[in-house]
Length: 377
Image (cartoon, rainbow, N blue to C red; front, side, top):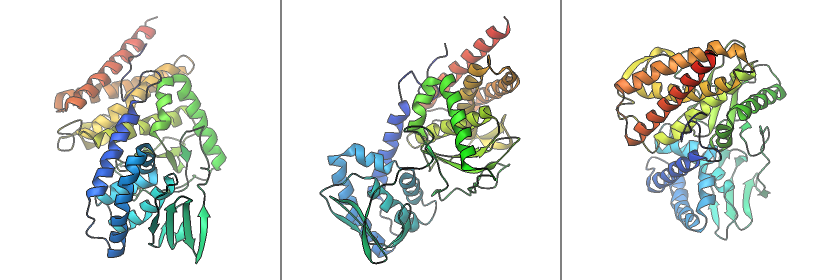
């Protein structure tokens, strides 16, 4: 029996990520309310000044609904990017605000967002109203009622969806030496092939790591396809985009499952980073990494180990039915051993970071013991 841990393998039925993500969204909301956004146009500035009291009122009436709307991938990604000035804030705000209003339940409060914009899923709109009837949009001079469309390409009930749309402004910024951005691409494959592969991978995870899989749909909202790679999988996620993962298609279900686990783990840790640095020297201390050829900040080593330890647990669970995984499992275990040694030797963890490192080490040790005992029989 492997030990449970709050951001690795949660206890059966628990979803610790939910509490972390809620706190991160509340922090985002607070930053949004107090940010003057002095560099945006007067019209957008006026719109925000009218919007902020409405959101404050809605937070008192139905905080769960507001947090859910703020946590929508296209809202939170663009708001965080605007607040951090990762890009010019005006187009990010003009994209995020209509989507935010569209995610809210109808209210007796009335609000007009009279700024023309191109915001999915509306397209080019002249204005948008929010009130008792929900959302109405003004398009080409006509007022149209709007109903939230059913999300296409959902992997499983209440699970993430495969999307051919991406609003992340940092999508083409890539830190991995083998990748050059994240261009949306099905890699010449049919979307049905992608859906089959992703569902097959999810089935393997659900069977092998049921407690991890139970939390998974709370973490990942959207998977964006970025091509087909028959020899390796390439994936990415971003700290400003909690709930988003970029994946390449791979012919092996186990590799697809590994990528899903890997990027979901990054999303968990990225959410925690908004609340706590985990390592005080995570950005300033650079070191070699057992999983990358280039020097990495210690935070990168932490991200790798935090992702690959649950991957090792997944491979270990599959080993009886997939004996060919023994060699890649041993390789991952060795990488994790080296990563943990580096983190213990060079890291300066916060209190939360110390708990995280201890539980990572505990799970790794249990996997080592489990693997050794099975090999000796």
